[in-house]
Amino acid sequence: MRSLLLLALIGGPIASHATHLYGGELYVEAQTSTTYTVTLHLYINPSSPADRPEMPVDMGDGVVDTLPRISINALQSSACDMQLHVYSGSHTYSGPGNYLLSVTDPNRTGGILNIPSSSDVPFCLQTLLVIEPMGGNNSVRFTALQNEVSFSFSTLVHALEALDADGDSLSFELVEPLGNGCTGIPGYVMADQVSPGTPLFWVDPLTGTLLWDHPQLIGRYNVSIRCSEWRNGQLVGQVTRDMTLCVGQVPTAISDPEAASAPSLRTLGTDGLYQLDPPGTKALSVHDAQGRELQAHHHAGGVVDLSDRPAGVYVLHVQAPNAAPHMLRVLRP
Image (cartoon, rainbow, N blue to C red):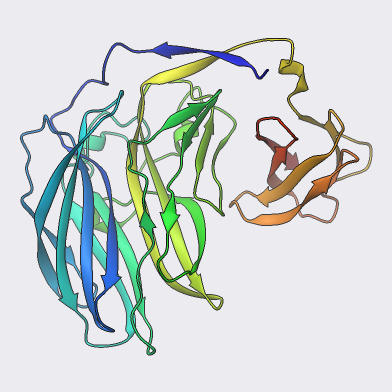
């Protein structure tokens, strides 16, 4: 049996604000080698009076096209009321090249805990399209909606469920959201840095799954996840999901007899060597602070060797048979 949890629930959705935009993403799909369908997803607070029947999109080639709204979809969420507004249109480029598409809106939602005065901060979303001489390119798609958030025991989970029609290799990373002029937002901090904070807030670089161990405060947080597409070792596209993570419940752990079986790490006498307790065969992967996988193997002895690694923060993924996955963070001095 794994640790049981008591979920502290608030009574209903987080309070609404007049501003309206929770998040979005921008996709491109090749019709021909140079003509593309551009689709914009915006997640909207339906109680806001602001409405956008069409949205201008900078296509990255000096042209701004206006995309009409083609659908409005109500979404079920226990923490934030939201709708998905979909905009779509086509655009033809002059030829191969790198094109940075962008869309902006002045009405980012209010009350975001890790963006100071978020209702006064504009929203900017960018997507990189690389058209190669050999032909068209399709951006990655996130098949999971932004409101699809769950808890796995004490860990909040949001899985992007990314799909790339071209079969490109994908990598994922947390990035800062963009604000005025599509630049960084002053005062922005990652969600886990909001007081009181928790030790682990991480995106799996291979799957794009967001994991937040034991969030402490109910409320709204901005999270931006960038997916990069790679083909033959070359970057061929990027899509960013800028989202408002609505935390409407926080888990409280209740100890049980098996709680002590969760893995832990202790320092051995030799610099860079650590003992993984309890011992036993486990699947182990080591990642750096940017989420890049450095090593992966099945581990039987319990000793983790970082002696050949430079000083810094490392994250260990630990999976024992018939047990929940765990992540440990270690500071290599």
